[in-house]
Length: 146
Ligand code: DQA
Image 1 (cartoon, rainbow, N blue to C red):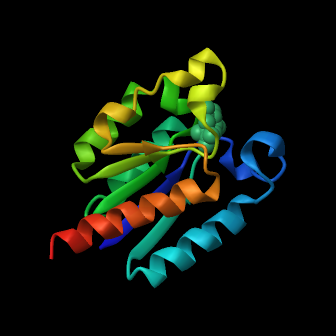
Image 2 (spheres, helix red, strand yellow):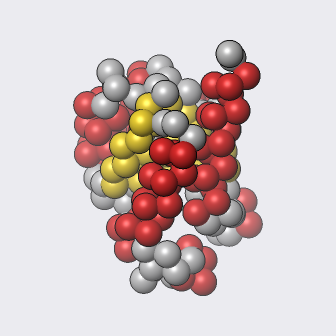
């Protein structure tokens, strides 16, 4: 199983950006941990970050024939990007939306996700653990099909 991980805008700033909310790990450290866990679960893994709506859509499209599942942190696009929602829908593979912070307990604009309706689930508020839990979700799902 091949997993595509997509990080949205401003997540390249992790470690420096609001560490009290997003934690102290850099994106590089988060990616290393995701990659290690994915490999230990026997997954193929590709990880990308983009600050641009169209860039995210292009990455999803470019990896469509490789990926079997998507883990996406759409960052601020979570709350208003119908273009990314439609790109995920067009991909036609199972997707999980993840967030480092608990968006249900922050400002009102963050409580809405326009992405969630095209995802199987949302995992939030666990920092790096949100991504790790998403990997395990797909692992459990794949194992239960055998
Ligand atoms: C975020 C939450 C979003 O509301 C915010 O815009 C982000 C990060 C998170 O991982 O907690 O950039 O997706």
